[in-house]
Image 1 (spheres, rainbow, N blue to C red):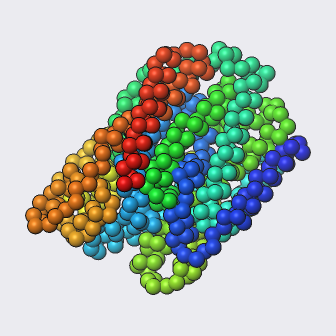
Image 2: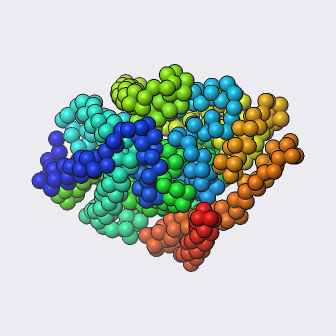
Image 3: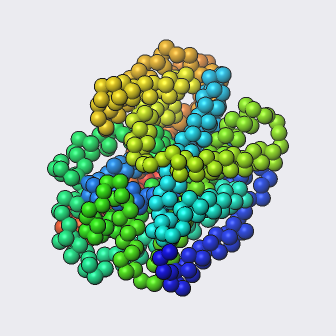
Length: 578
């Protein structure tokens, strides 16, 4: 084992003590499934938003960013920065609609939006596929990351044995805490991990072998510190960059960036106190995820690129961890170990709770055993969490070697689904049949374009998403529509924009309907302003760090985004209070 100083042990143990204290303070009283899975709608915007950020900060995230930067430089981060577009669209167009729905999970929205046996089938099918199978894959690669991290700190110990203890601890506090307790623990874990990475980056760039930012810049290939791709070898291709920004953000389903919101993001939105908290919490999540966090990871990744230039592609992510062995001050090893464990546990806890919420609330409770007590359903959820944890362990240890292929496959095979997840809010003719068709059509088109015709990523997504969108729109005029009573009730409850719902009420000329004006212009202003704020802010930091670039452009764009963001948030808040 690496020689740990007393401060390393101290910084390692204190976070666990804090987690136990938070658990005792905010543990779930376990009176109802609504409390356990939705915190009874009591979370503040800050707690809900920070919990979302903590979940996306998995143990593998800094390693993945390191792998990207070693391969394509800073510009390679657009492979995930593009997702912020969909995130801001969710904030300003959908967060309030989610909160108004009153659903416990985002899959419950299926029952509120659609009708008939097809709605029941869709809800149950997605509960199994997303709540267990896809959730299992996600937890599998999170566990896989820990199997790579553990040997750095404990080289003489068996990584798989340590992982068992971590899983046991995660299952234990997830079962006791419920969503409210998990969310408060997430707040602590996020700031622990974030501050740990900031200190790590500071000490890394000031290592004797590096000598500060200026010396680091002089030691690196200039293509590695480009903010925007320039189309040359070694950076993200221009055409890929454009497809990411224009198509991928709305077409593909990916955990934490579902088009229109969904998954654990929707779960935390639904758990907020009110519509204002839903808006502000989801806004804080996107800003923190894409703007506040990345730079410490980027700097350490660049340091690793200089110190270990010959790492293979498979091992490149480990460069982030190897920097820890380069003479860090006492306490840094313990702090970073705690940071990685915090990142791992926050992701584990959320995914265990979220997956169980699908299988209990959207499958077991409405379809398998109706009318049982909440205490019974909670016991079922504990069993599901244990089964998921055990399965994810075996998947990581025996069934996974790399997550990159699974990640690309998920984006490609789901690239016809995102359109429907957005359109169901805006176009009344979308039915459960349409969404079922999307789930069938997307993998078929993936096989056609990617496997049979061998069209490369991301062009495969471009072909799949556009073809699927056209076919799905046409299908809405062929497939059976949702029961009108259900549609009208959904419209009155969630109050989506009226424009695309006009056709529904034209079928009932004698009905007097309420027209809800959702200030789409303000929502668009908020989305564009936030993009200016985040991208302008990232570019401004880039210019300041490397003392090059167009700072006179970055700062005005950043400030313009800040002003537009302030105005749009104020306007939307005023509306919600009426």
